[in-house]
Length: 379
Image 1: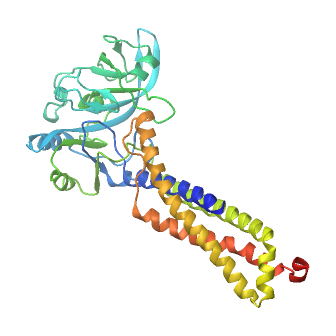
Image 2 (image 1 turned 135 degrees about the vertical axis):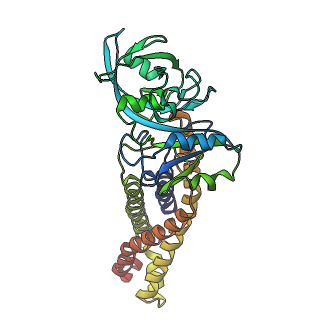
Image 3 (image 1 turned 120 degrees about the vertical axis):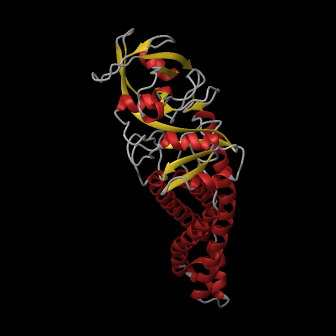
């Protein structure tokens, strides 16, 4: 029972620790055809789906053009993310949705689960930075956004900004969706320059990240040099951006460690205490044949440490399985490929936690051995 208690505590710690490492080390928009994301460095410790404020990348159209000219790169696009208010005149409904501005290439690629195939390839309105090109007004809505606004293909959308006399039209309702676990998000995908104009973000040509699709592993070092103080994240990483920079991964890791220590210590101490109480005669015999109090305490401590280490070894194996199960469930229900990752540091952390559990849990059984009355037990 002691081994089982420690195994469960360590399993939870390793699994939750894997989630914390996944959150802390990976953060980007998920797309099936995308292999790398370039994101600002201060957004690597994040948790949710979309970042709407914070550090951004500049000059992103030019960077995307250079990347797309590289024969090793299949596709590159900046992604601007904003929460915008739109109104559907047909249903007289006004709601806030998540808008993603991209540069489509005419193929069926997904951004936040929404297909960009219906959008005109390129970004005509940008017009080499003049923002005076052809306005497409094309919008692809996710099913959640279409349901929220009662939209259908061909319907128009209006914007609350009175100074922007531009129309939008839904060219497709994508069957894909992106969920954070609380339900699918209402998302619309538009051309990047048009979203920049809608939100008044044309200065500096900003974007929150750049998506790069490639089959060449040698490209990563090249795109890492594009911007200072950025991080290049691989496709296997967790898909997520936070609404604000947070210490959530650290909080999760600390909670996992404290939970494992408390649960493991209480469980082992209780089970060892019950075992010693049931086996008082053995301790009394050891005392009678000459074992000193320190020797008896050493035996109890050694037994506690051995049981704890055995439970830890089993817990680590179960924790690795828990990480795999977590990733499968995340892929099935959240639409992300990897939410947790295993790191050898988790084994080291489990060893440290096991040592703390064994040391703390030894106090109670050692105290019981000192209270054993030999004459009472043997009599």
